[in-house]
Length: 360
Image (cartoon, rainbow, N blue to C red; front, top):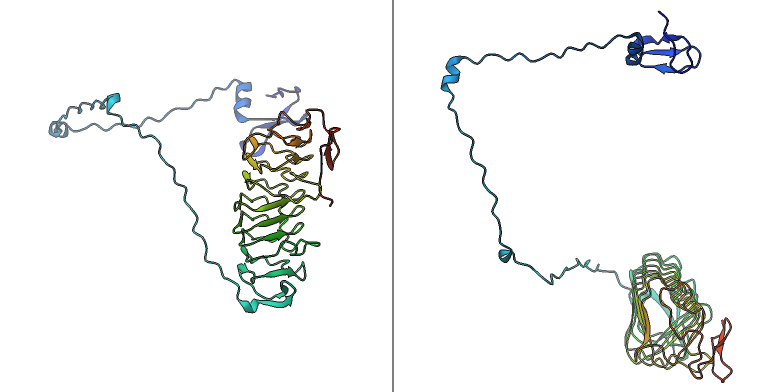
């Protein structure tokens, strides 16, 4: 008897091993069950039932019939008996600080320089690098390149007009740097700590003046805290914290005491791309916020001065571009209330108000 294919009507040929059949014409395979249906053969499967052995009468007599135990009713608690625990403090497990190897005096080659010491060479391999007191300059900006064993840097005092003021990039890209501690006045050169991806905290103690130059902490994606002591003079240049995506808060000293170099305020791209930044408190004497200063700060909730609000500050209309926070007085002159005249580098008004950024 010939069997025809369901698809094209071609003749089926049985496959070897009893695996069903396949069409000569289209190649469509048919299962054994389908071929049986086509032939009208019903599968007859007899279930083999286990045979129960009769229990001897004597055994039946011996067995004591035990009535099932009554189910215990669940205890119903009164609402008044339930104790509500409020204000439970969740204590996070704090990772124990590792004991780090430290530098010794023999690790540094130092020469005298007017006003302090010149760091000529570093020969150590310590995890915590403690710089000598009164070190005013690093001779070679590549001195610490590739020193991936460094976890912490402690600066006892780098004078504000030095530390590779012109070149910068002294510690750029250190792979395992986690902490920076500045114990006196300090200047962070351009791109000095850029791309230090594991840097978590910067702490400044006992300083009277701090300079943070262009993109000095840019792309430090793990940076969470910047702690500054009160009553310091703080100058921040363009892009200082650009793309610091873990930074949640930044608080300026109450009065920044900016030098009058034609620019007083928050420069362009200072906090651009700080996607976790929620709160910023500016110095009371801040007068301007320049273009893209807070660009793409998508979690930003508030920017105020220590006195509250942003009254008296000239804000570039694109200062908060792409940010979740938008001040009402952006683009309005704080002196006369007219529309500001703004460029990439300057905020001004016909009434005479002007604030210009530092030159690159």
